[in-house]
Length: 336
Image (cartoon, rainbow, N blue to C red; front, top):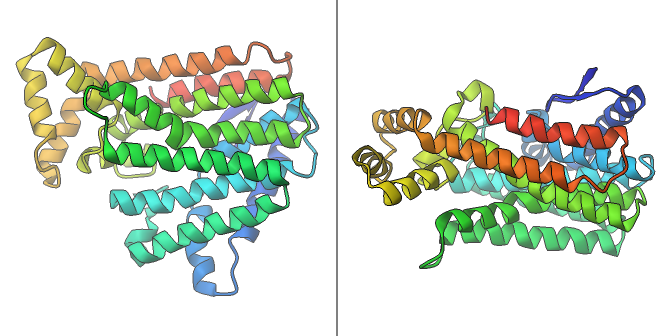
């Protein structure tokens, strides 16, 4: 058993491991090439997060999904570059919106160069992704456009919050399906599409990706509360400080409303206070780390990961299927 990539996926089949490693290496080269500009400063800013590393979760899914067709088909690697460029672009924009100081263990672009440069660099990456897409055909362009619309819609819905009478947890899970699930689903779809896999397999892998994407973000929600910066690569409690209601916080509020316990209500009041104060922020983070709401969020993560695993049932029993199943376990492991 060997380990593939920073995400830590173990692969038992040597041929599959070789295919995935070669594919990811080619994606890395493609990312560096796609982020070059005639203007040196743009190259520096565009490659800032590329060179910082990352799990390359989405390209990994492209490579594994491509195993259900021809993994060496010419569109496989470029489509993986497209999804990772799109993901990277959203990170530049997210860090501006969240006023984040750290990303992937390095200074965020907005901290280093300011918000304007960070936003424009994200736009530059979107443009480069579109340029590559144009060579992959109109169907690929349509699929990516629909996913991007869902991604932006999810972000807007998160900003707007749930409508009156809407369950906040249901609203949030819908947000995640758009913000994160859509692009992870496209990663699986592109891998299968570009490899010429059967349409049924394309649909199955797309459903798997959507569910896995939500589980992956829920695991990030748990990590934002439970981990230190070394584990997560960003400042713990960033969402908490910015007042972004991630699942552990929503589960806390749900419990406080249902049970009316004084300690739950007090913690909600603390979360509603000014968490730009470091001492208050540390107090809220410590309280959430031992609260049952965090464990509930972990259980929600497991449920989505299990749903993703179940979606794979119709696929043939290839080594790639086993690897995709193991990714479900890896996502759950990240959440503790």
